Image (tube, rainbow, N blue to C red; front, side, top):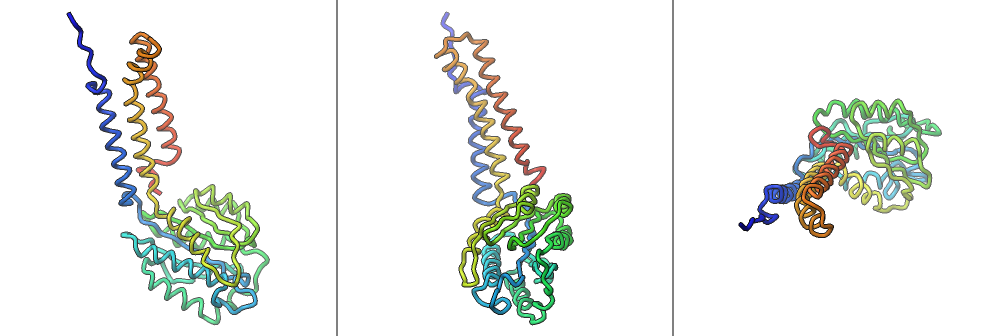
Length: 307
């Protein structure tokens, strides 16, 4: 009597993972294209308004570093307005050992935010309120003020973006406070120096740290590019969901390989008997699954930590 040996594709252990691979890849593509799954975002942007941002010129004069900061905010808000669910944004200042509000409250309207920002920057009393200037600005004050604002934004991903020169200080207690409130500390340091404590703060809170940004009081739009390409894109990315679906696809693919490895590689190439070859193939799939799941958990599962 002839024994019929089914083809690999006829086994549920092959075609079920194959279907799942296709589904998970389709979900990854769909979530990526439609930006599905990203919670709403609340952002506090703290701009350096100290005298180093307009040296030798009037406060917020055209082409100064301060003006470039404002133009970068404008570029951020323009991109933000195109989102189906725009970020809520509020602007603070950094200078004079203070963190004054440059806009009144959280808002998602570009016109409202820019109107409030420009009116505040054109207030002739503002430069005098930022005096005297300390040798180093205390970012703890900025983080404390931003925390009060952001903790009111429930069910939002919370981001603090600080734009400053290297003349700042920050303590671990402020970083711990931000971590406890699930606030990411993002930093852009212009000039040739870096701020190791600020870099550490950004890393501890899963934020972004960028330094060695060369700016001058003669104009330029480089700051706009950094705002859009590094910060805006990351703040509004649903990469966690894409990574989750790709991880699921990888797990399904590992199980898809079980029968081909068993029959074509271990039995066909290495002439192993059925039992040990099957165990090895299953072991590879199992170990690969455990490693993939561990990496997915380490990277943050979107259902548990969507931000």
